[in-house]
Image 1: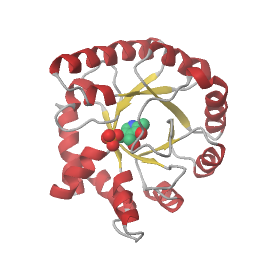
Image 2 (image 1 turned 180 degrees about the vertical axis):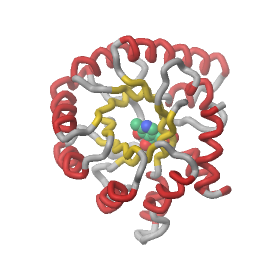
Image 3 (image 1 turned 90 degrees about the vertical axis):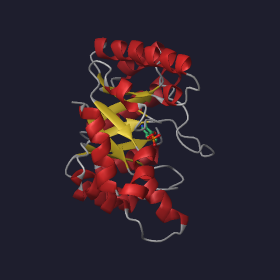
Image 4 (image 1 turned 90 degrees about the horizontal axis):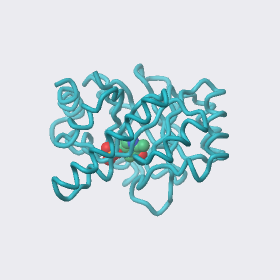
Length: 238
Ligand code: PXP
């Protein structure tokens, strides 16, 4: 069955809106586990707009499923990752002005930088995934830098304005997924997935892990965190 990584960044976004102590993403992680999450995902951004180092360190101590840290290829964030040692690191691009991670990492255009970050993380015992657009050139670069997995960026699929565009984007996801599996890499996906659009992505052959944040946190506001995670887990198991 496809594993569900629950991204809890936006629990921290609500806390940071008031610079206070609540809601605590550490509590959300525990509730996500109770709801059946297979992993907890957080993004420690350079501007610390949501997750803080304190959260990451407490999550490292308390999360009993996979802890996946999204990070940019920036030296001091890689230093923090190597000291905290999450189970998995997912390298992502990061621009300060963006609302969320907008595109995949340009691994092909930054081979040396991505290779160095990948090696440092792996030397610390961390499994490394790259967040990439469904672009064969980028997937070749994942092999070239020695990454162990690729997380396919599903944003274009999720934002498709018409069924025809959605179908075309889904075909791109399938083609990229085949290339990832043929290269011997583990296959993950995420971004913009929700309760309506997740199943075609979950059905891609050899899909192992989906990372989903915004739609689960949004539903949790209405139904509670544990229930929101359980409902998404049920969709993945159908
Ligand atoms: N995967 C990666 C690499 C991301 O950067 C994000 C957003 O933080 C997600 C998955 C989750 O995206 P969403 O919040 O749209 O579900």
